[in-house]
Structures are given as structure tokens and as C-alpha cells.
Image (cartoon, rainbow, N blue to C red; front, top):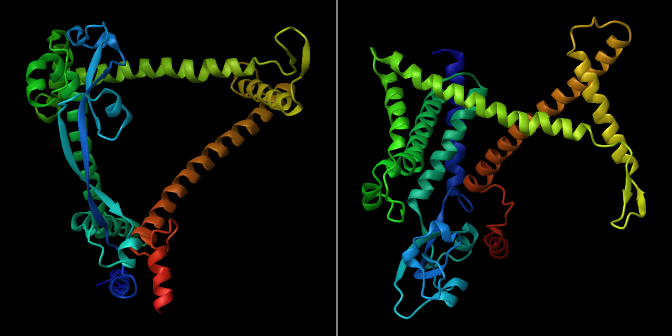
Length: 362
């Protein structure tokens, strides 16, 4: 074995020992408690939010269009629209109980240890540590965790895409009766729309990517996706960035504020004028830097240099914002490890009661 491998084994052994010690002393660690909460829902007919989209047969005698909903029994809608003999169903939901309440009262009969969530908590913690092991060096533990996370994420989003996109937006348009009977009972539009055969054909061509001899057929779908996406994004960027930039730049630097009757109320604040002037100078100098038809010498070169400063400040701010976002994600993972898993910190005071009782008892 190499020294690096031996060092990694020693580090893992030390961490494992510390985890075992932490699990059996004090309040322990890494346990999730839940209690079963029974909720009741009642079927009521409420006024439709969009009467055009509701079947006219559901209109009442007074001409009011209604739609059927399931609402909580204790909700305002149930109290207002519930009728005699309305159908009621019950739903059992698991609600997580703060660990401090259970630790303070071990005889709590309503809260029980949820093994599935506890195992999930430990799996998330161990995978987080496996990913952090890359800070030591690229190792098999990191590669295994990375492969599992990527594979599970791909499978999850594939299932989400199937049920949120393919079933309602494709199958629900081509065979709405079958989809209503088996997948989505709430569907109201049961008329097939055969125009959706075109995207279905493109989808089948895209699956030819898996065929060794038919991969060229998938290029038609890829070309269509890339072309339409580029066009849609271009329009979005023009409206969201280019035109908004022009609109913000053309705001008056010094503006007189008037009342509705035309009398003068005051002038724009000093800082608003400075902000607008800075924006105007930045836009003009940056445009000068990217104007290559004139050599950047003399006055043009000085203006272009000012534009470079504006560009560097912008890039630095964007990079800093990205880094802060990553640091926030890292802090969230550390809080998960030290709070939810190790129970070393308690920022939300979930175990405050247990800690107080432990101090009193000694």
C-alpha cells in the first residue's frame, strides 16, 4: 500500500471511531422521529376560478359555474360550501417531531423512531463525507459516491419528466381517455389532438440515438431542439437584457418631480442622479471598448480603458456572487452535518428542552 492509501484508511478509521463514540454518548445523534397525523378532506363544489375552462354541465341553476375540489374539513371553503352528505376521506400523514421533545420525554407515545428517514439521513451524511473526501485526493470512495449521485439524479429526473411532461402533455393529448382512466382522473379535455403526433415522431427519432446504425436519425430532432431553443432564448435575451438595458440607460439624469396637478414637488435625489450618471458612463465606455473600427489611441483609448475598468468590476461582482452562492451551499451542508446528523449544534433550538433537562438532572 502507498502512504496516501494508508493515510486515507487511518483518517476513515478515526472518523468512524468518533462517530461511534458520538452515537452512544450524551443525546446521541442522527435519529428522526415522526408522529402520524390524520387529516380529513371533504368534497365540495366551489365557484370556478376560470369558468371558461370548466364544463358547462357543472353550472348551477343560477348560472354559477362550479368545480369540484377536495379541501380540509376545518378549512373556510369546507365551512362555506360543504353540503349534507358530502364525501369525506381521511389521510394519514407522517409529521416530523423535533428530537428535543422526544429526548425530553422518552415516554412520548405519539412520536416513534422513523427508520426509513433515519437511514436516509445517515445515507445523505455519508455521501456528503464521501464527496468531501475529494479534498484529500481523487479516490475510489469519491468516485463511487459521485457515480451513485449522478445515476440517482438522472433516474429521478427521468421519472419526473415522464409524469410531468410526457403523460400530461403528450399522451394526454393523443389518448386522453386512456390517460384519464389510468393516470389522471381530473382531466376534462377528452378530445384527441392529432397535431401532437409531430412531437411524438421527433421524440421517437431522438431515441434512435441508442441505435448504433440509426444515430443519424436523432440529428433531426437535435437540430430542431437547438434551433428553436436558440431562437427562443435570443428573443428572451433581447427583451430581458438588451431592451431593458436601453430603457435603463435613457432615464433622465436630473429629473424634476411634479405632482398630479402639475406643481413642482422637488427634484430627484443626489444619489439617484449619481447612479444614473455612472450607468450612462459605464454603458458608453464599454461600447467604446468593443468598437474596433477606430484604433484605441488618444481620447478613444482612454475612454476604452475606463470601459475595461467597468467590465472588470462587473466580472468581479458576478464572480463574487457565484462564489457566495457556492459558500452558502457549503454552509448548508455543514449545518446539515453538525445539526441534523451529529447534533453538535442546535441553531433552531429543536433540542433546547432536552438540553435544559439534562443540565437540571446532571
